Structure formats: structure tokens, C-alpha cells
Image (cartoon, rainbow, N blue to C red; front, side):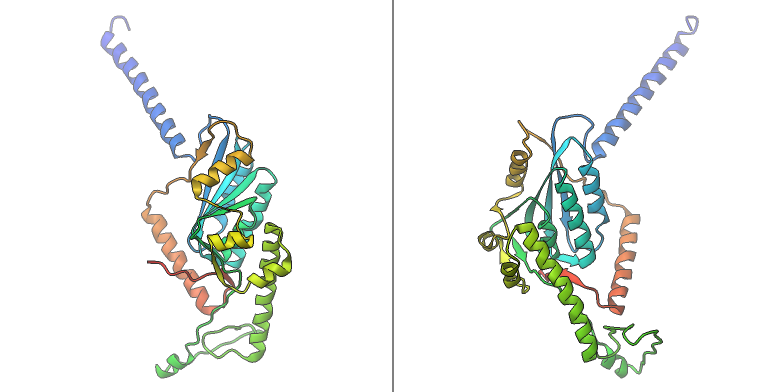
Length: 296
């Protein structure tokens, strides 16, 4: 090497360049993660946005953060009109599990109604803006009848089924009175589950919740007066309360939600899923905790 200083220089340069590239990769990897490997006590934010159809992303984050000893509190930022009954209940159940490990608070955005409110009831504390739209404690099933349209087009459906109620809610024929009663029974059962979840989470008498559980909506200010919300405040107020309840001294590190990068493949997959879900909705009446909130 002494006889070939140029070669030695190239080797050293190559080693340094390799270390530099490895460092850049490590920094990029860490910056993309929801949390760093160092630092003190943390508060994590999880976003629940839009119509709730797939609970898995939120559930996975709750499980991960629940097991992280450095995360002392979790803040759910809910901006959702609700969604499917099953997905909302899955997230609600995981929120209750997380509460056993650490403090869980909810910060309501513009709307946290129906299924969005159902999820919020699993938390230790709920904060809302004075004008946040919440409540809508109820269950809805919609079925569109297109029989007359098909008749005008000269089309006729053919159905083969194993039981007389297998095509309950079919858009291709009117619903019978017997079917309506069966469906109403299911809705009443799920509605009662919603009422019990609110009463348990908010520590309110069941009968008081039942009086409010007719699908009506409330502003954040009204909800606080009724005991459906603890305090009025924004996301920063919620983070401050989370730090206090978790006993965090000093300034906590906030783990913000990872900004999702645009992916053409993800977009195409999501579009495919949306179309499949749309097709399923046309063939079966889904149960929804959903408030139809108009968006501009």
C-alpha cells in the first residue's frame, strides 16, 4: 500500500463513502419510523379518519404502542362520521385493552359521530372543540330497491337460495314484513350494544344514554353538558392533559402519525377494494354506525 498511495486513497475513500451511505440509510430509516430509538417519555398520536371500514391499521398501531414502554399515553385524533359496526367495535375493544397499560385520550376534530363516538367511549378522557359534531348514537341499514328500473329495462333477476331469508335486503325485490321485523331485531340488538358501551365508557346511567340514543347529533359544547364529552379543547390541549394524567415530567416527545407517501400501487389496490365493497353493499344490507355528514 505504501508503494501505491493512490490505491490506498481509493480504498480509504471507498470505506468512508460506504460508512456515509450506511449512515444516510439509517437516518432515513429512523426518520420514517413513527418513533425514535432514543429520547424520554413519549405521547403517541393515532389518527382515525374518514369512514371506518378497515380497523386493522388502527388496531395494529394500538397494539404496537401498548407494548412500547416508553409511550406513556396515546391520543386518538378522531375525524370520522363512523362506519361499519364490526370495524368500530374492533377498534373500541383494542382501545379498552390499551387503557389497561397506559392513558388513552380522544381529541375530536370536525366530526366524531356514530362509530367515531363509539370508539371514543373506550378512552379515559374525551376532548372536543365547541363546534365538533358528535353523538349520532344509533344504527342504520340501507337497502335500495331497483326492481322497477330493471323491469323497465326488460331485465329480470333469477335467484337460487338455500333458505327463505338468504337474500334478505335484496335490491331486486320488496322487503317482506317478516324480513323487516328480523332486520329490526338485529338493529335493536346492535343499538343496545352501542348504548351499553356509551354508558360503561362515560359512566352514565343506561336509561340516560337511551334517551339520547335516538340518532341525534350534538355540538361539542352540548355533548360536554350532557356528559358525553369531558372537556372542550383542541389537540394541543389533549396532549397537555395526556402528559399530566400520565405523570410525565417536563416536555414529552410527541410521536406524530407517519405521513403516508403516495403510491400508485396502493391507490389502485384501494380503488379495487372500494369497488368490491361497493358491490357487496349492493348485494347485502350492511349494519353501520354512520352519521351522514355533508362534506364540501
